Amino acid sequence: MEKYNKKPEYWERAKKILRNNDPVLSKIISATPNNQYLTINKKPFETLANAIIGQQISVMAAASILRKLNSKIPSISAKNINKLHHMTLKSCGLSKQKILYLKILSNMCTCKPTLFTDLKHLSNNDIICELTKLKGIGEWTAQMYLIFQLNRQDVVPMLDIGFINSFKKIYKINDIKSKKSEQILQSWKPYSTVAVWYIWRVIDPDVVQY
Image (cartoon, rainbow, N blue to C red; front, side, top):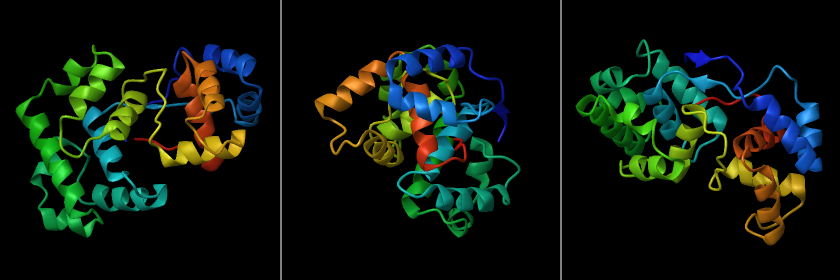
């Protein structure tokens, strides 16, 4: 995976504001090494493919599939996925549905080379709307693209189980849609992505990439 290792330009500013607005999150930020931050995948197809692979399975299971897949092809690209037989993809641990989703995505990228360039200039909601037109890409997958590919700074993946469980544990809240939860989430704006990234660190110190 090729990454931009440069820290997002808004990161330190966001940390300062989040520390001031949220004392609970402030402790998590202080406990996290300063050399850890959100890094961006340089390859848009790979980001979406990784997110599709990671749907509804553990981080460890997804990592295992990716290791096997990377042993079959030089890189995760539309061209390389198109070349692979579905039985080869199945041998990597991919389900029938996810194989279908990856094939649909790779075909779309081949037919419409400007797909990812066109998305760059859209709003978060419009990007989600466009991506979810593709079979196998739901709101969560589209939001992973916003975070890990486009570096959008104000994204809260409300369907992410890891985030939900960590949020409930940290803030001692049973319902993430409660009024108290809404107040906390509102206090993160316009740097919700940064807050989410730190909330993820509580349940998984290893920085996950898509």
